[in-house]
Structure formats: C-alpha cells, structure tokens
Amino acid sequence: MKTTTIRNLCVLIFVALLISNTTNGQRLSSKSTIAWTSSFNTIYLTKNVSVWLEYQWRREALVANWQQSLPRVGLQYHFKNNVSAMVGYGYIITYPYGDYQTGPYSFPEHRVFEQLVWNDNSHGRLMINHRLRLEQRLLGKVNQKAAEYAVDGYNYLNRVRYQMRVACPINNAKLIDKTWYVAAFDELLIGFGSNVNQNIFDQNRVGVLGGYQFNKQFRLEAGYINQVLQQPGLVGGKQVYQYNNGALLSLYYTRGVK
Image (tube, rainbow, N blue to C red):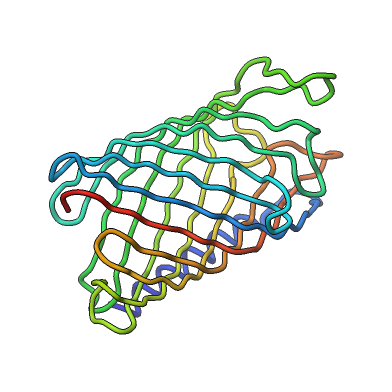
C-alpha cells in the first residue's frame, strides 16, 4: 500500500508536468525565487464544528518584493472517519512581479470556496491527506495604463484544485507530541468555465517539507516549493509560464476540542 501511495503521488506530479508542457506554440518563461510564510489556525467551537483562520504572506525575490497577500476564513464541519467539509472566503491581492508584468498595479480578488478533506491513516506510518477544493473567483479589472489605481469591475472565474500530501513521522510511530516528520505534496489547479483564457492549466505546486509536532496545539513546517504557473493572458501572442522556486514556512495552531 505504501508503494501504491507513492506511485499515485508520482503519477499526479507527472500528469501536472505533462499538462504544463503542452502548448500550441512558442512560450515565454519567467523565473522567480519565492518565500511563503503562512499561519493556519483551527478554532473548535464544538466537537464537530471549527473556524478556519489563515494568512499567507507570499514574497518574491526571496523576501524583497510582494507576490501575494492571502487571508482566508472558513467554517468547517468534521465528520467521522477523518473527513471534513468547509465553506469559506478569501480576499487576495496579487502584485506585479516577474519578467512579464501586466502593469504597475496590483489587483484584488474575492474568492469563495468549498472543500472536502479526507485523511487515510491505514498505511502504517504513512499519513495520506487528500484535499479537493472548488473556487468561485471575482478578479478585479484594473486599468494598468491609468494614471491612478482604480478597479473598473470584476471577471468571474471558476477553478478546481486537488492536493495529495504524504507525511511520515520519524522518531515516533504516529504524529504525537515531540515528533519530527517529513512530508511531500503535489497540488494541481485547473481553471474552467466560459471566462477562462489561456490558463485552463492554471498552475501546479510540488513541495518537500520537514516538520515538528510540538503538541496537540502547535506544529511547524519548513521546506521547498516548486510552482509552475501559466499567466492568463498572452504576451506578444505567446503563452507565459512562471517557474518559481523557493522556501515554505508554516505554523499550524489548533485550539479547543479535537
């Protein structure tokens, strides 16, 4: 079963890379060094209901420039058998960066999402996490040639994303207090609907992490991320792909009943 799980993760990465390398013409590429620092917080209200609070501080040129500011809030219901469902909202600001910027201004995004998470802990020491998320996105239309920043309306987009994550504790058989662990994940993001432009393949993210579980409340992770992202618009009639590599640092906090 362990071999099957690792094979499935490798297949997902391969499919994502295959999609990202399929194009009808020449492409332009841009490379950036990124650093994402995140705080993920689960606050239980009852045994089955929790509030999700998240903030991601995403930087480019390592930490010199903004890439994105990404807060999210959600309401989550925890079923039996390690399954949970969430509805939530995020307000995202994406800043101009890379070699092929659309203009000098950032643009806002209102994002509603629904997600399903299920955990499979039947593979010995391996802990396998699946996350399926559906997003309804309103992207601000900003006139990049205007003298002043102004949002002139919004474009509606849909996106579906699937993440598979595998973690393995090192010094204990399970992820309990004072446990070191390693993890790897792959997440594929696909755009769909009438308003999707060039980027039906939106992006893919692959990460390798090391972590430490302090106790039931706190967990810290750090590692490496590779992000392949296709910009929605053409530049000179060519598709633009961003190849971003860098560091991840994430703090997880859980409070209340679990």
